[in-house]
Image (cartoon, rainbow, N blue to C red):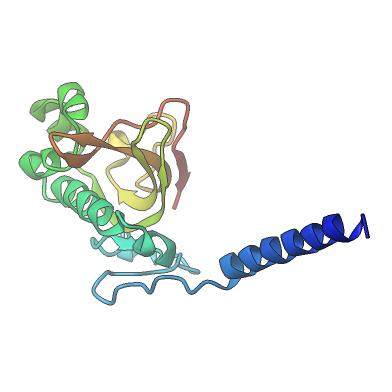
Length: 188
């Protein structure tokens, strides 16, 4: 009789824990909105003549379900469109004051003079330790080889990097590359 109460409590605790675990595993995921351009990572590369690919920033289903998915996509779209159109003003609408300070207009125009960005995909959004958001973003750039990074002088590069989104003046902006992270870059 003395063991009955602890046994019943133990069995009930296991049942509750199992129920919570089952609820988490089988919980219906929020559907992806139909008006958000969703993609999966491409399984094949584009032909060299088709690089860098579409200028439209797309999201993976995981990123599209995130509450800030569409905000992040719009920021990345303004960022890449600004570069593609050599429109510094458009690019500035997407980035933090810190990024603008280190890339004034003339340096920015020179740095991106031959760059085109495409095949952009927002893969994941995570919350950073300081309340910022971090986004995993990949894209393809084409550029004149002399405008490519010195350590990868190529006319076509596939990139993957982690970028922070920071709150600035009551809105999200793309910050500088997260310290300690190294963008992945490989020749197309």
